[in-house]
Image (cartoon, rainbow, N blue to C red; front, top):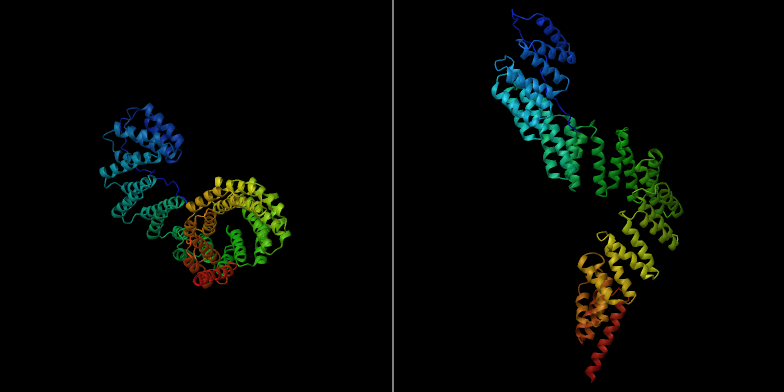
Length: 571
């Protein structure tokens, strides 16, 4: 919704009583009548020609000021405001006693507005009202001030002028128009704030619109945007209230399908897929010409997919492909169709679909996902080398894709699993150099350290683990990194340092916790602290007695410690 360029309502049909002079020059009366007739018939080009000629032929005529006035108005009608302005200025400067100064002052301000000189226009309309407060044109001047303030994007001042118009002319038809224009401008400013993600300012403006207008299109769209703001802020209850108000209060508004669509998205966010699907399905039924129909069908497919009903999901995506090709949504639906087949373990079908996407849309922004899926299918089929080659192609074809680091990690893992640590390290480093903020970076850094360990480059491995703990102090891999660092410290016989590292592994990861307790016990034995070591082993039997192999190894260590203690007593 945009604001049109509203023009000042000019008073162009003037009625004046002219006193005929008994001393008119020959032909003057006839020439003036000819010019006036053209003006009154709205033949403004001809009027301009006749009036300019009249002024040249009769420079001393008593009608000169009036001719300049008609000339100025004609120029305005011809959308030549600067030439009009010159005529109005000439009247005010050259004819200080003209009976047309009041109307000329009004038109001078109007000319400035039409010339897009809005600040000057606003000042001129204010001067006009100050000089002629009871003028028959004062009502139009107040309205023009509202427009000028709006063109200057000064909504507050526009509201001031609107209040002045209401006070001076409470029955003016321009009041309702002014209110509507201010509401539109407020809505437009709210949209600008919204696009800049200044949601607080946008919310203020949309709420102002809601409180000041009765225009249904403005109200429905404002409530819709208020809902969108809350949705973006993840305040789904407030968003839901706004969308439902659009749906209930403005049932035939073009905003309704958008409100329904967003309402469906709220339920989807809350993982209430059944309710989300019911809402998405309403859009094609209630609004058969809506531009949201393809997206609605697509979202229905996604809800089935999220529920694990891949056959029904596939049907919806095929519907999109059949009815809406070659749209962008149909391309995405083709990819989703492949994912449905993959999850149904229809690997050959999935591979065919992913390859179809790659062949048809090699430059598409989702090409990385297609290579990812194709490689994953090949991996499932036991074609490890083919899978890796596919992932490499995906990573190289679209190196700036959001999926590029994930593809790189798949390649690196495949080399790592084959024991090709040098090649794996190359890919891990590429991820860390080019995608340090990606979700793949933590695992890349961890496995880089493990690869260095496998190559017995322990010092470099320690550097990687220390770097990991510095950059990623929290996360699912932290405990694994601590385990590896603890192992390295044990190899260096840094028993106390190793114990401190193992103690930081939380109980939530029971397998690692059991391992850390056992290795902590070994460190304590090396520090000649058998009683503390025994306590560490006993914790395994108490809290992790089902975790192999550490439960059995703890039992063995406990038995050995007890035997040593018994032997010492007998000595």
